[in-house]
Image (cartoon, rainbow, N blue to C red; front, side, top):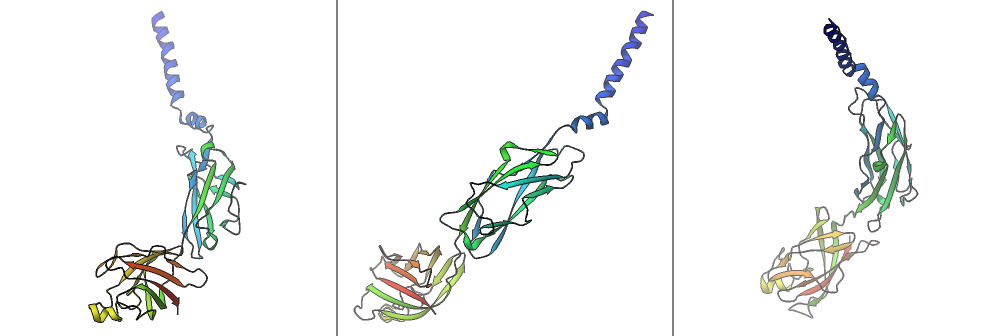
Length: 284
């Protein structure tokens, strides 16, 4: 009888222990004491924008790192500040779309967007500015130390728009019929191909298309057809040819766009027979 009474005493204890461990209400109560942890999705970012005068909307996420395993999560308001080390200026280089320095992770969500407008007309391509943000607090939660700060480097991509009609005057350093046909002026189109790439049908300034080379050597309208790029005022090209060899930038020559007048200077050299010249394109 003693053994039977002891067995009856042990079984309820085991049953009670199992019941407590599996109690959903108890589990939820224990988990509710775990803090919600928030932070920036990244510690750094380097977006790039065309310097075309447009206002560019940029978004970064503030995320809920802890708490996704909960049956429900509360609304969390996250406050941030602009660090004094920032070189970008509010109202000039950027603005927060909401007008405030806080975002709210809505109830049962795990992130919220921080939307920023960047003004491309003031971006310095050579010396990009930075916007440094620090999360200062989060209601109903804590801030992840490793993701408290976000550094945004505001990069610029030069906007190129030099397509159109030009008066092109070419002064020749060498061709087979000097001193005749020097200099020569024609009207010509610079055709925009997109993304800073352009085409001019006769970079020789008429020498090949309707000048002495057309009658003497049978060159034509596209014998000196060249594609080139313009990036931040600099003109460059590779793998372009006339009928006898490569056409390259003239050593020591100017290949650039005047930012004030829009006048383009292209200095070219033909490796086949050393024809070369400097062509000045004046917008019409």
